[in-house]
Image (cartoon, rainbow, N blue to C red):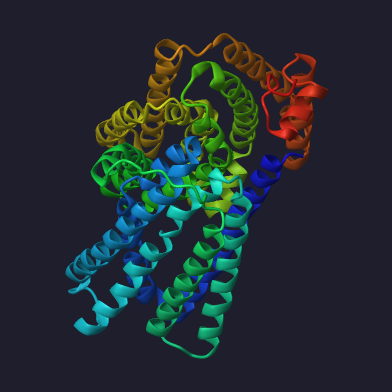
Length: 477
């Protein structure tokens, strides 16, 4: 398997491990602080996490694009944006403390001094941790993302041990939060030391600060909109239907977000290669075809499995309350089927049309907000799910039109392959009707699905080799 393939597997495994380790850390904080203390601390973390993406002004993505095309720009852009991010983070810590104290002063039993200290620790830690996002593009450009995966797992593993040790020592929430902050600081320093060796020595004067911030603003906007998708839905459901339905909808959406790891991991590994093509359609077409094929194969298979096993997933997730809302989960599962929209939107970055992507995703958020406000009172969380799916689909259609009409990408290959993938899945779905346990049904479906993909010519032995090498078949010759 290629280095890119190993990196994708390592990143995917790392993501899963990190979520499990973080769940353990959260459990320990709950044990240390109790429900009320943890609720306060998690609110402070949320404030810091919302402010963190604002602190680099889109610099990390701009560094990835420009550094992938000209390695002499990596060092000066990295240092300039890092300075900006450090200063901005310090300012946001102060603003976050002021916001936290203002919001929670009346509700908290803590004194003013204690509330300021805890809010500083809670807001400051996510902002400190987010500094690593300025170093990650350096590893992407150097094709060394496996270092990030290893260091990130080491961070969460060490954090779990440190917080667990503090809890065993009988420390209070203030001491445990200080340990969290200190451990994060040590990890960030260690990570930057590891990354520094991959920064190219050659240096070319980059554009001015103002120009770089202006160029990075589109990336920042896209990043903020991606944060807004799920959260806008959740806030609408909470405001219009109450906390119970918000909890159900939020739990269902989290299941769907897990599967969006597939396109995100692939693009994280390969974005530097895409940027090196300089936005040229002819050079990017084979990558586009390969992404569309593989993501459609994964998406259609996952969608079928999710729809068929929706009741069992909802039962596992939360029991009878979730079992009554299976329809909304099945509607949300369509988002997985829309992996091709994710591919199209990400290729907008590759062809230097981030500003257009920002516009299309803004339309999607506006549709979610306005449409959800109108339909949720009438159709409940099913209406919110439909609105969310239609909004994301709309952004994807705009992106596809941009690529096919404006950028000249060829669409016949991916369309014909997508049709064959859907036909194969529909035919294989008859295996789900066999009277058998759920697990056996899914195994039979998966085997039939793969067999039919080979039969109709979507996959071949050569194609499997190309998939394992994570290259387009057109590049495998």
